[in-house]
Length: 450
Image 1: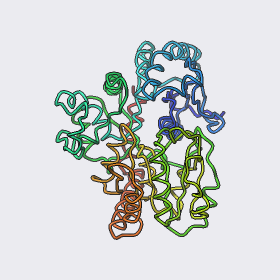
Image 2: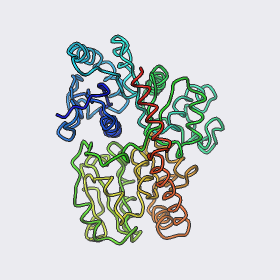
Image 3: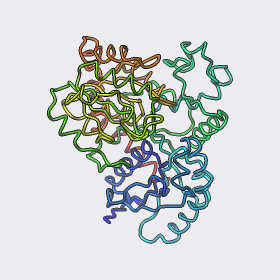
């Protein structure tokens, strides 16, 4: 293992979900390139592959989970249990690590905001703690406003008010607020309040975003929030990165794309967690069949309620679409989005996917599934105007109309031009003199002096 360590050692602790592990490891790579030694502390559940990161030290800790148990948990139940189960193992890990220090001094901990227990442990070791917020600045602002939204009666959401604007959080409507339908709503509110509090009590909040994309949200959070914030993204654009995917991607995606015309393909992927109902899956299938455009469709095993994989496809579907469609279990997304054949990305609007699409200059078809994705989709369609939203349910006829609007019409060309403009702004932000470049230098100074 190569170990720079000239600027000290940084500890990183990601939440063990794909959308959180990916940006944390990308951030660790950025800091490694700046002369820091990197140690990743992680749960055994969904642990990253150390062989992909030979320059990092990986320290697994016990999480008290069995595989069967985790498969039955919601994200929020998983996070709540981790915050209890990991406190003592994390404390033991830090005790061993810090007592054995010799040449490399540990400078600080960077943890996911959802891992509340890390604050108590870091404070007991007098270790400065920064947090990574793995969604956008606008989403964070909406989360921070939840107590106010409850007080003003926007939450819990009432069906009769879905289309009402929320003047406290433009451009959001009531239906865009970042909540999720869970049996215990209070547990969700507590988790979000904890997330915001962990950011508030940290030495600084790091965002995988850039100022030119979220200018008004960044300005608002800086005004409303006591803790320094550091939008230093897009992380994946700093340099070609080793894959942090917890699933092996299907490389046939690229060889299939190589045979398609420029900007002709719809890439369809709903991320590592989102799942659809069987009737929705059928409408998606018929929409893709009827739109006449080639499509690369990621169908993750288990992503359709009640199905293992492709058994819910309409009879004869694969023969009907033939070579025009290519279905895989997982795709190398950054390579796919960068491919000249891809003309649109039908996405669930997870933050990583949205940012990757913008940085590749690919317009989006938005189908948010839960929580922060509704906020992000609203920003995509009504602030940045780099996509169109599939709203009010999924019907094959509407799907075809939306695809044609984006792929074949003048409006789609205007959307494409705007997303290409944001792609260039993202590139400029990382160059010397750019906003993210300067903010990263400030963050390094802050960490080095903490």
